[in-house]
Amino acid sequence: MSTPEALPGSGENGHPLPEDSPLIDRIRLLFAEVLHVQVPTADTDLIAAGLLDSLGLVELLVHLEETFAVEVSLDSFEIEDFQSLRSIGAYVQRCGVPRSWEGA
Image (cartoon, helix red, strand yellow):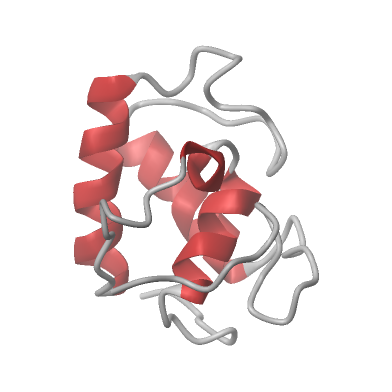
């Protein structure tokens, strides 16, 4: 499954996801519960801050696929899509998760 080209952090309509978006909240919860990492803001650079390493990225990809029923294609994988909570949320949206996702 390929994803459309978009700026990292922009959702399906090209606008940034809000900090308090249910999608970003759910991704923040994944970081806390699965990776045991507290992410301060939706725009924190996870890689530069040392909050996401290669092992954590693999674990995150597995949980994103399970949680949101999306397929992360390695053919279209761009590290910029996983640089912040906002860019991860935008990537998940572009993979087909509805904009109105409320979480479970």
